[in-house]
Length: 376
Image 1: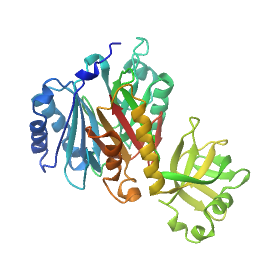
Image 2: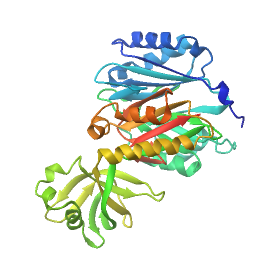
Image 3: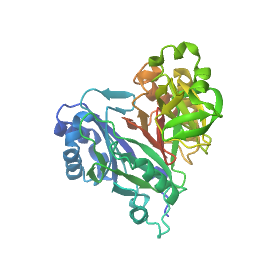
Image 4: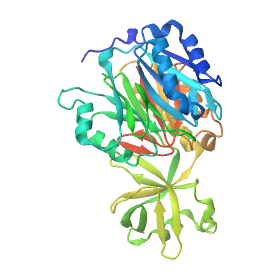
């Protein structure tokens, strides 16, 4: 595997809030100027106002820029550096002049087919991928299974990305526009790429073991009725008005890597003392309860960015930040707060991203998190 000289790596950012898709593309191309001449890959995120035109936008970018490899999706919101664009048309682009041997596009995979994934990953070639940047259709129920399958086939390959969030058409881009599956780009690297995950909720109380469950319904915790344990942890005040619980109290499911998945509390059964959460669970899983906490989320984001930056073998040159639609002003009180943290920790490097309906990392779907990909 050839190493890319850091001095040869260049990243260029452009964005547009033009109301017409063709005008947005043209404005971005004007901003990029000659930067596209040596570019080999481009990342594209657009607000869902352009969802139905994503295919046209990609074709125009390919024809007029000469860059054939585009990767991205649409979201409720997108961002570029310190600007967040939401509830209006917007397009953001990031181009890079990576050497062709550094990356390979992953076209849409729609079903968990192990043989197909092996072919796409060149399992028999000895090809070594450091990271996969992935985007997925929220309507495909196989996405968690496919992420796990990727992780099993390439355990050393980190995953990062997000689920499309759109009020209209759901579309992902990997060379061309796709829908209905999982797609993205596979990236080689010798320490020139790093991934970090920041949580958006703080654990409280004690850890408990799920001792009986059915699907996503927890029957008992530590051998006691699940709702009895939950009530003891959250207190009588919240339990008097259960309507206050969704969006404030969550289930934190422990992972083998020391991290945890944050999932919504979907329902309380007062008679049978059961608890329903937004994830299929298994007996033996450890669970904490969590609450939304802006200060803790801020501290976690700062620490995550520092750790991710230090894990690079060279200075960070650009980044992609994918954050849950439930973060932003809902957690930090401001749409731009997270981007300000990134700027404070990373300096003035180009960063783009989008608001996701679920975040991809470590072979799993996360929630209420921020996923950062840094390129050196």
